[in-house]
Image (cartoon, rainbow, N blue to C red):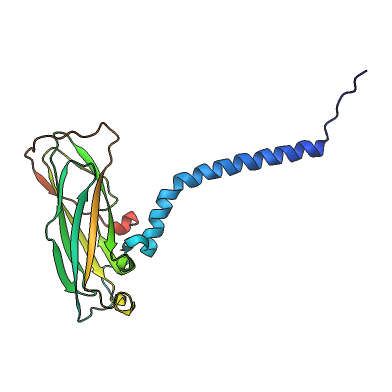
Length: 210
């Protein structure tokens, strides 16, 4: 004669708790994976880690030093059929002075293409002291065939940079942008340049968090 097995209610509750914890842990790991990229972006923008520039909370530095520094401008493309270049290769200004530079992009493909720019600063230690007031980075930008876009960058170099032993003698900073495709479509094939019009973009980076 067999005897029915009686399950301990305490054991059942323990099993439920363990199962719930496992599910919650698994869900949390998925959430962290999705949040990793934007969190890393926020961390870099807040600290200047990896040459990421600071988000300027104000449009001007508190003081302007009687010392000049040169900023070189670099542009790169990664899979975008654009002609992407700085208007001027370099600019010399006083440390603490707010200035404006320009980049231009022209869509050389025969259909609209969307791109997004990332950036960094060299030397990397200068990132926290390079303050961008206005920038086109991290903004999805669509250009029609042959369309040209003017993209201004407003920035200043924080005077506190001279208080950093490793940077006190730095005379040149490089601001580099790389333009990536945003569209999840077939790879863009090469094509003949096409003619088009132009426009200007102006996005305040402080509103974008970068």
